[in-house]
Each structure stands twice: as C-alpha cells, then as structure tokens.
Image 1 (spheres, rainbow, N blue to C red):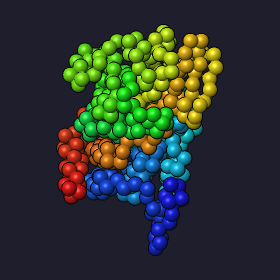
Image 2 (image 1 turned 60 degrees about the vertical axis):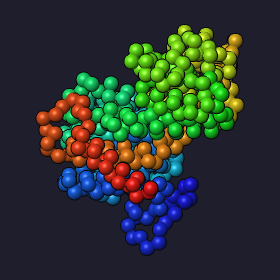
Image 3 (image 1 turned 45 degrees about the vertical axis):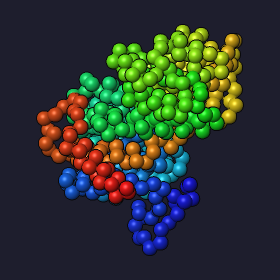
Image 4 (image 1 turned 60 degrees about the horizontal axis):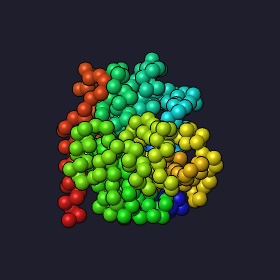
Length: 391
C-alpha cells in the first residue's frame, strides 16, 4: 500500500499535493471548503486521534484548505506506520502518541503548546484535559471537539471553553458507532483469529451504541449473542433485539468470544477470571485498553505464549485465555478502523464543528455543547445527496 500511496502524480508542482491518496473523503473535502469560506481567518487545529490512513487524508484535506494542523496520535498501538509516513510526507508535523496510562508526555505537551492551537480535536479527552489543566499556556484556544462518549464523561467539569460533543451527535452515535465499529470490529476479529462467528457464543459487555451495533451484526452473521449490561433500559433494549440478556458471570462461563464495549475501566474484574471458560478469547471495541484488567491477567498467568501475531495466550492453572492486540481497540490496532463512508461523514461534521468554534457566535457557551442541528443536517444532506447519485 505504501508504495501506491507515495506514488507521485505527474505535473504537480506543490510538494504537499504531490502524492496520490489511498482513500477518497468527498464529504471532508466539501466540509473543508465550507470551513474556508464560512470561517475566515487563521485556524490552527490539533488533531488528537488514531493515526490511520483515513485520518491522515483528513489532515491533508484540512491543510490544503488553509488549516494549520498538528497531528497527535491518540494511541501508539493504533498508529499505522503507513499513515504516519503519509502525514509526514504531506509536511504535517506529528507529535509523540498519547497513552491512557502516561497521558501526555512532556515532549508532546511542549510541541502542542508551541503550536499555539485555536482548536483541539480529541478522541478520548486525554489531550483536552491536559490543555485545560494548563490553560494559561493556551490563550488562543477557542474551543474543543471530543469524539468519544468516554471522553465526554471525562470533561463534564471543564468550563474553560465550549467542548462540542461529537460523541452524542446523530452521525457518530447512531451511525458511526454501531455500524462503523460493528463492521470493522467483527472484520478485524475474524481476520485476526481466522475464525467465523457463525454458531459461536459471543458475549458483548455493554449495550450502548457500539455494543448494540456489534451484537446485532454478529447475530446477523449467525452468532449466538449474550449481552451483559447494568443499565435497565439498555438491558430491555437488548432483550427486544433478541439477545440473551444475562449477568456477567453467566456470560463468561458460556461464551468463547467476549467483547468489551463500555468505555469504562476494568469491565472484567480480577474476580471474574474464575468465570471465564477455558479457551475464551477477549477483545475490546470500546475505547482504551483499561477496559480489561491487563496487569491482573498477567499476574494470574503461569506463562504467556503468542500463537500468532496479535494474539497472546495466558496460560493459568486451570485454563487458557486468549487476548487480542493487548486489549487495544481491535478494529483500529489490527484493522483499518471504520469503513470510509462512516468516517468521512463524522470527520466532515467535525470539520463543520471547527467552523462553529472559530466563529464568534459561540462566545457565551462554555463546557459541553451539543453539536448544532444545522451543522449535522448540512453534513447529512451532503451525504444523502452523494448517495443519491450512486443509485
């Protein structure tokens, strides 16, 4: 892929535009042009998100439309080498990756501060929290965009600037999370394990948008799906979707594939290890690897082996448990992340959010702010207009 990506187009004089692109993001292109027209003036955006190819192309589209971009990968394990090389080839600086345990290292923070951003985009709130804690170093920041539900939960007390809530937007919560994560998560797991989910007992912990999408797609592929959920409304939702709604211990005893999709910490606690069946496989499609108690898993294991790349087998006294990609988001750390159509729509809406933050009409807003309906309707109208031309 890399050789194809870096193939130079003939007749181009601008180095930033000299590479052929591996994916097309037409909605992002349109949103970036809208941004340049409707939000004039200098814009310096920190993109704190997973560095895969589609995000790299989004960064280029923004840069080509007058936005200064600093890319801060949200996770080292989800940083794809070809995407990293691609961003650098565009002349866009890339800082060291963030980490759920160490947060923002000194070098990355210094680079972000020196960049003097006007807008911060984040995928998990690690960066937003650090910038807010030292806001005197960021006098030009007009606001932030947070992409994830777990991130929104982390920034609910920050009132320094408006934080646009992409996580609960229709495009992200109702389209991207269930469809994008469900499709890419299942694809990554089946490719990594070389096993079908048809006929398998699949346990999904958490029945929010991500869990619901994953569970329903797995069921359509023939899986027998169990759901463990604490929220009574979501449990009822899962019941009427036709899932086996059970308590966590029963799920762990029954299922050979267990998926965490909550965004919460230690979804499976150390005390639950005894309930896991022998040969069970664990994977995460929620947010960070801390959904799984990795330290306790290592402590409980007598030995660890790697039967194939991306799968670690923890051998305990009475069972073996397989962990995919060290508990990182399996659809990005192994797969390519959301299919292009979903990420194009949500990145386009995020781009429109940059324009809203840049303009003065948000001056009186502070804290978490819902994405305005007019922006969401604009992105959706573009999507449907393009979809109509394909039919």
